[in-house]
Structures are given as structure tokens and as C-alpha cells.
Length: 119
Image (cartoon, rainbow, N blue to C red; front, side, top):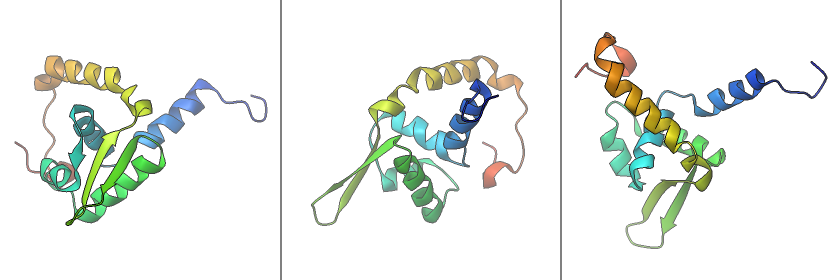
């Protein structure tokens, strides 16, 4: 490989790194459904701490995948939504949901995953 040339594997590694994180895909799935406020996201993701949610949202925003809108109200209202760039991931997320609906029951649940109790 020439200096400065990237292979598709290199590019996919970058994409995976951008979307990796304990909670990022779950946050993206929720925002794919609709706009959410911080508290709504926190309630929708059992086990996530306020600190971790803040960190994951900041990373997703820095990567241009979500936008944060602060409304000049008292108390302040902040909403998060997917950017147009991230909405391009919608078909991929829908495909994953379809795959899971078809195969998820055949995959054994892991105990102790991410601090959550199996449901």
C-alpha cells in the first residue's frame, strides 16, 4: 500500500471506531426513531450513567452524527437528533433490526452484559 492510500479495511476500521462505544449504537437507534431530550435518552437506556450519556452524546456530536439544539427557555430544553449524514445509516439500522427479529431468539443471552439484568 502506498503512503497515504487507504484500503477499504482501513476505512471500515475508522467507521467502526466512530460507532463503537458502549452505548453509541443504542443512542443512534433511539434517535433514528425520533428527536429525544437528554432525560428521555437516560430513561430509555437502563444502566447508563449521566456522565457516560453526556460523553457518548458529545462524541457523536463531534463526529457530526447528531445535533444538539438548546432552546432559550427556563428551565433550559436540549434536544438531540440525527444529522442528515447519520440518517444515511437508517437502512443499515433497519436491516440490523430485521436480522435480529429473525435470528435474535436463537442467540443465547449473555449474563452480566453491560451492567444490565437480562430481561
